[in-house]
Amino acid sequence: FLRLYKELHPHVGYFTLNWGSVDVALMKQVLQGLAAFRVEQNIHVPLLLKLPADITEEGMDDVIDCTRLYWVDGVIATGPTMERSCLKGYSPAQLQ
Image (cartoon, rainbow, N blue to C red; front, side):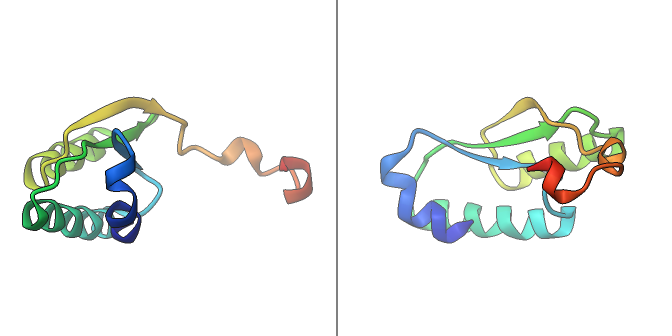
């Protein structure tokens, strides 16, 4: 994601990361790298986190911590659900 941010920041109005698309530890690493780059280069293209519809209370605590620690500019509420159990009855071909 940092590579994309470096290449695209002059051309976009904001960036969005989907919370829940990776585990919290990896998300924190990504956000830490982005925050360091943004400060180091004095670049401020807004960074938003898109939250899943079924985020837990614990997940919200992680989001709040990350927004404070890594200068996240805002959130988009809500993205798609993380619940996938209803898809188990379908083959990959049917889902395409």
